[in-house]
Amino acid sequence: MTTGTELLEGLNPAQKEAVETVDGPLLIVAGPGSGKTRVITHRIAYLIREYGVHPYNILAMTFTNKAAREMRERLDRLVGSRSDAMTVGTFHSFCAKLLRWDGQVLGLESNYSIYDADDQLKILKESMELADVDPKRFAPRAVLGTISKAKNALWDAPTFTKNSDPDNYFEERAGRVYHHYEEALTRNNALDFDDLLMKSVQLLREFPEVRKKYQDRYQYIMVDEFQDTNTAQYQLAKFLSESHKNICVVGDPDQSIYSWRSADIRNILSFQKDYAQSKTVTLDQNYRSTSTILDAAKNLISINGQRIQKDLFTDNSKGDLVQVREAYDEGEEAAFVVSESARLVREDGFKPGDCAIMYRVNAQSRALEEACLHRGTKYRLVGGVRFYKRREVKDLMAYLHMVHNPNDDINLGRVINVPPRGIGAKSMQVLADYAKVNRMGLFAAMQDIAAARLGGEPCPIAITTRAATSFADFATMMEKLIELNQNVPVVDLVDRVLEDSRFKSFIQESDDNPQERWENILELRNMAQEFNAETPPDGLATLLERLSLVADVDNYEDEEDSITLITLHQAKGLEFPVVFIVGMEEGLLPHSRSLDSEDQLEEERRLCYVG
Picture (cartoon, rainbow, N blue to C red):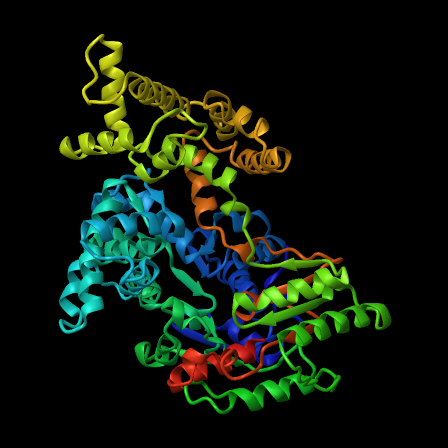
């Protein structure tokens, strides 16, 4: 563990000032490579060591699990086990816990499901049908994107309808779908990612006693990557800090690259106005880049108007010149960068893992992958088919979601025929009609069938005997698993799900890569073991929350023998000794969608600056 004096050793004057500024609102403008994570963690440790702040009263929020994990590891080294009492995590993970603890006052059951993009799209399409909106005329993903932006702006369905343009045909249709979409989420006792933020803000806004509880607990709040916050996230931070104003935000307007995810650069630009007594500290010394790279980046970003002025400098060497290569087409370009990375490994002592090829859009990876395959170069594609998106993993997770939240019709629909149970679409529709008439979920309807069979009564719905038996058997199996979840560690529950559902034999006896698919299942089982120490049924709830909120970049680990193919957005926060940025041409970078908007063009510059 480190003393308060030791925490200041090795810090430059600006870093030291940021660490020692404890009370009141603080804006830390942190240029790239300026040691911001060190400043954040040392400031938190300084609060604990020098000011006697209890770790329980500190909240630190960031945007990726990877960043939160790194922050937690550094704090462990600085203050030891005392860091366990701190709350360190992403906005979404914090909000998920907030709603499990106190969401009941909003009418939300604590065993709610968190729907991923696939689940959201499924109920969105069902909602479009109910709203009589043609998916061929109105792209479902576009409608879902509009709903997401509305939620991030804290507009529920009625507010969206009230504020939308009455002459905008798309917005009118999206508003109708939004109403049905929300009703479907409520029926399934489910939230989407945006609900985690919106409902947390609603909770703090509408229930002063809940707001006070968390204001009293979290006396010191830190927000990393503040330039990437949206309206909901900033409002959440404001509510939590409004009584004591001990809020420290860290960010750089020049690295704001997520407006397409509703990030609002105005949050960081207006922080000093929102908090009139705030102090600003600028971290302007770069420890990562050569002076040549830094000068090129500064010249690029200086053209932008929406920024906070800072003059970055470095004591590093001048380094090699930035190289510009022109290629005939993407194939020639890909062949060059893959060949050049191989030359650097062969002649200059770099490892393949030191090399990253970055691009603006995912589609650009195709030519690069082909070049790697042609040359026999091992590569890692960040953003490919993620572990949690693989069919067998999602199927097992769907069973676990059902155990946790039996009202979850989306996940029930996913596994009712996995393994095959001979239940056809017609039987499912009859079951759904019965559930709708009786205002119940699909699982409750199946329980009615099981109860009738157990009591020797006729099946309450008009389906074949085989379908009725399958429904009843499924309901009985799930009831046993739901009861088991109250008493056993989560890994034991996973084992029983695999056995009782026959999912284990289904995978092992399949013709579709059975060994690889079973290894994926075992990997998920290994993850479940991490939560064995938690009291049932909390272990399952925590496991599902972790799995629902994981992102691809969270699992990024260096692979020394592979070059990395990655988008510029995904690369933010990572470091590589050798970087190729491909597709630096009008239409790709800057993207064609940005050419008619100065704000969007500035964001394209920021994206290139980050690279």
